[in-house]
Amino acid sequence: VPGLDDQEARALVAQGCRILAMEGLVEGILGHVSVRGRDGSMLIRCRGPQEKGLVFSASADVRRMSLDGTGEELSDGWDAPKEWPIHAELYRRRPEVGAVVHAHPPASVAVGLAGLALRPIFGAFNIPAMRLGLEGVPVYPRPVLITRLELAKEMAEAMGYRPCCLLVGHGVTAVGPSVQAAVTTALNLEALAKMTLQMAVLGARPDNVAPRDLEELPDLGSSFNDDTNWRYLCAKESALSHRHGAEAGT
Ligand SMILES: [Zn+2]
Image (tube, rainbow, N blue to C red; front, side, top):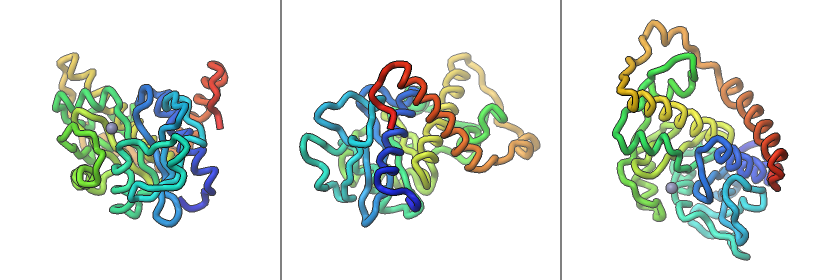
């Protein structure tokens, strides 16, 4: 990611993990965020010897590894997440990808299991989330743990060049040019899934947003959708972590 030095990139990955935990997309110790590093490497949230879960992620938890799964920083009790091939395969195949999120968010998993289509059912409530439904969310149908590059390739094939993918019986993968964008896409996907799920529980089947209304739902641009929202999420996370006396907060 241009413009980010190594320490900033590690801090951003840790911040992304804490935000996903705060917003309920990851629970406990499962899930990971990475950013593309220099020379064909990636900086990825690893599991440490004193692992306490994603909500307590710090820069030291973010280690450099190569796209073939090796790295000098994977030592002293630090292990790559088992599903590291998801990240490696997406960086290898998609040069536009600067960051990857993999998580197991409950509403997205429920929607996948129920076979519910993610459609543009709301409008101004959350325009970027609506757009994910409008443009279509690809589905990877196998509930497998993606511990091998062959499986990561299958998932990446299913995902195509979209910003996110639903992994049935498993979770989601989201990508973007930056950590901020990838995390925001995962949050928006979960927001769309949550509303889709609630409608299904109620037995309601809302229509898609009509074309004439779509014209009044502009793409507000990444500086509003991602940057402004990111500042809010960082401020909220910082306030909560201080209140709870957590050790995070880089
Ligand atoms: Zn997973």
